[in-house]
Image (cartoon, rainbow, N blue to C red):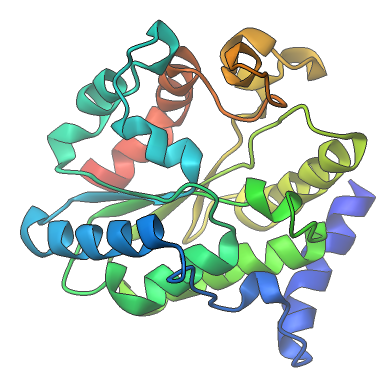
Length: 248
């Protein structure tokens, strides 16, 4: 836990010292046409949805909008079962890192709404091309939480741990350090609820490959994205923490 503690302490110190890492800086992807169109579509959806729940994240969250045709891609029924009753809005954008989510939050996606709860699942892409450290990613997640608190002070956040994946030893170690830092800061109650879903996807420290679809693609990709069954298991795992935020 010592490494995680260093990361936990370093993240707020980076911000306090005035070194704001890119991971904690709002950065748009408006130059990417589909991303711009999705952002605009979500702003329009939010104006009429009156959501009780929002999901903030990357492609793992965006996948909830898919419904086949492959059996492993029937995500939408999971969304309908667990989140549609709360008029939930899916604010997951494929490829987003903490900085891109932060830009969306600062540019309208938290405006004019008053959800009871927000689920936040972000950070996996920080370890992709950006190759940001655990400390920088923790600072980015802290900035996301602060933006949510500032824009929606009545919304109760549920922060989900970064999911395990099969990309590299560096990613494995960085994910471990990030989740240790999140658990130390938010795992003991307080304003932010925290759900560590690592045991769902990596029981006993061994990645359950059957819960990821990337290996089924042609050509296969490194394991990162849960199947519909994996997302159902995630929904079941976080339900006890989410229910009191929505109904308490």
